[in-house]
Each structure stands twice: as C-alpha cells, then as structure tokens.
Length: 128
Image (cartoon, rainbow, N blue to C red):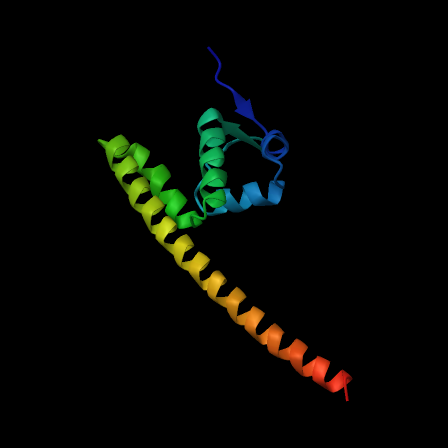
C-alpha cells in the first residue's frame, strides 16, 4: 500500500502558509522530506508534524518547544513523556497568559486614568 505523499505546494495550500515557511521548518530540522530530483516529497509523517507545529504556534509555543514535543515521539515511552512535557508547557503558557492578562488590565486602567486627566486639562483649556 502506497503511503500518502505531498508536494510543498500541497502542504502550503492545505495549511494556508507559504512554501517559504515550509522550507524554513525544513531548515530547522522539523520536517524531513525526501527528494525526487529537485522536488521535495513530504510524507504523511511530515504532514502530521507540520500540523503539530502550526497548532503549537497557535497555542504560543516556540519552534524549539514544538520540536522537543515532536522528537519525544521517537523516544521509548515517548507517549507518556510527550504528554507530561506537553502538560508542563501548557501550564507554563497558561501562567504567562494570565500574567499578560493582568498586565493588560493594569495598562488599560492607567490609560483610562491618563485619558481622564488629559480630557479634563483639554476641557479647562478650551473653556478659557
């Protein structure tokens, strides 16, 4: 049974990314296509890795974190190690996002305060 293969154009179209992005992931060692002449041929495994990379990016993981998660698949008992690592990364990401959320709330309150003072000063100037 022949496994599914993909060209760089197939993957770019499927994930709505540029071929340049895919080549970058290849340069980073995240994807390992074979070659038929000058054309890259991506396997189903490459397709799955690309999907995981893009999902990780959406969740805010760095490429190195995504690479670590993917590489854990090849390690003995990698499934458990991968899931444990992923849970740790999710918790770290959650903590970072909550901190960012608090920072944003604080900045919005400060902006509101400054805006109120500026509007009052402008109103005072206009009433003279």
